[in-house]
Amino acid sequence: MTLEEAAEDLQVNPGDYNIGFMGDDETQFTACSLQDLKECWEVFCADEGISEDCVDYVVAA
Image 1 (cartoon, one colour):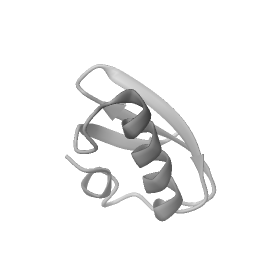
Image 2 (cartoon, helix red, strand yellow; image 1 turned 120 degrees about the horizontal axis):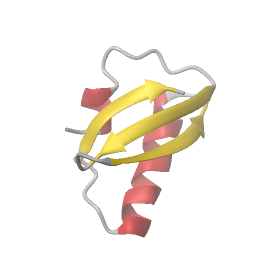
Image 3 (cartoon, rainbow, N blue to C red; image 1 turned 90 degrees about the vertical axis):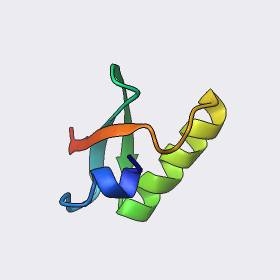
Image 4 (cartoon, rainbow, N blue to C red; image 1 turned 60 degrees about the vertical axis):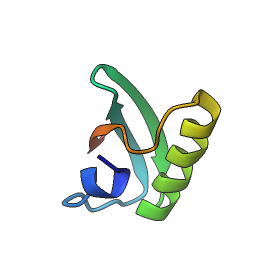
């Protein structure tokens, strides 16, 4: 699913967020808003060569 779908019920405030993806991988970003988190995710996906719609979950760390 997309980051927006995974974070649908999450209120994103300044802090750290874990994003699980592709079944068994996870990464963490510090973000101030959902838009900020989305931008971090997009850059990460481009750098790693993965699809942006492979998110399993988003949780506050």
